Image: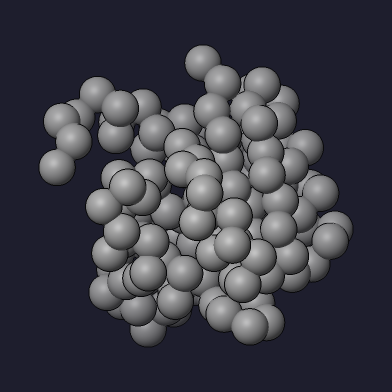
Length: 129
């Protein structure tokens, strides 16, 4: 099944790489360059999942995730945070803002596709709260 996935990252090469990886499964990938653009997109769209870079200009992935999880229409869309930092503080912050998963750079395409698909399918099979 094809899903709509929002990818927010300030690095054009990483956005392109993530788009290629996720589109391989037939998903529609919406890419934006920063947190502000992500929130603008989310005002009128509800993606099946979001992949947000932790470090971006204007607004980081933590802040976007925190806001998304407070909006009833968006709260059940899985949020994966993408980061180059693999430390306890980053994992704790991700849990605090309600992220569904943390993906570390460099990212494995096969692993990323599996995690995204698993999170979306588990949300679709569980009752909406």
